Amino acid sequence: MILGPAGAGKTVLAHRLSACTGLPVIHLDRIFWRSGWQPAPRDEALAELESALAGDRWIADGNFLDAGDTRFARADTVIFLDLPRALCIWRVLWRRVRDRGRERPDLPALEGFDLPLLRWIWSYPRTEWPRVLALPNVRRLRSRHEVDEMIVRCA
Image 1 (cartoon, one colour):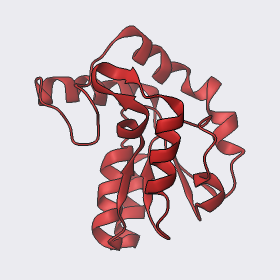
Image 2 (image 1 turned 30 degrees about the vertical axis):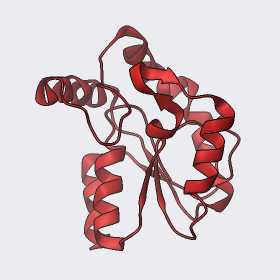
Image 3 (image 1 turned 90 degrees about the vertical axis):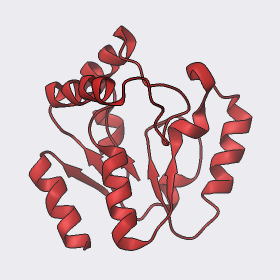
């Protein structure tokens, strides 16, 4: 499992770990959101997630801590990307410029940058940290250097 706010680098890390391990990546945003950022019906999303988790090994990219699924019980490692909020916001802004209206394969719709997203990134330490750190097998990475070290160790 890879957790963290938008812009922390969850998807990039998931793809890099997948490249060196051969494990498939499950993008939770594609499961829990539909076109236009409409929430997926909960029963459909949970069924799709449980189907994706049916394999013995996988890398799941995304949060959705209240989903009520089995991934945390099944994950041998939870990687928590605890990078500075300003960096996360900068990355989201940069993606907005870089992608210029192109869809990303890990998202169900064009990524926007709106006030609710900004608030969520900024409040992540207050609202999500306690829940994430209470999960079993959490490995907290606090810098780009620590993330790079994990990738190097994988290779």
